[in-house]
Length: 52
Image 1 (cartoon, rainbow, N blue to C red):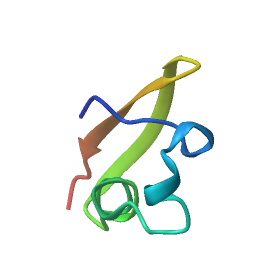
Image 2: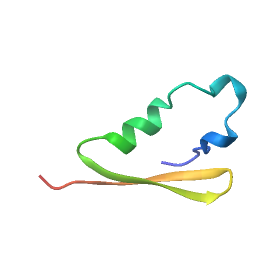
Image 3: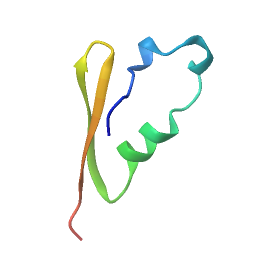
Image 4: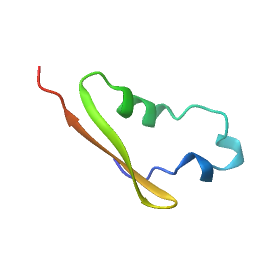
């Protein structure tokens, strides 16, 4: 998944609100996922399905 913005660069109207998409991918029980910073203002999430 791409086009994630690190929290410190969120617009004012986003601050203090949960990022549901980011939370879904990073906390999904069937995935191993991590967020990777590409530039100071751009991040991606890399995820892999866990074997049963």
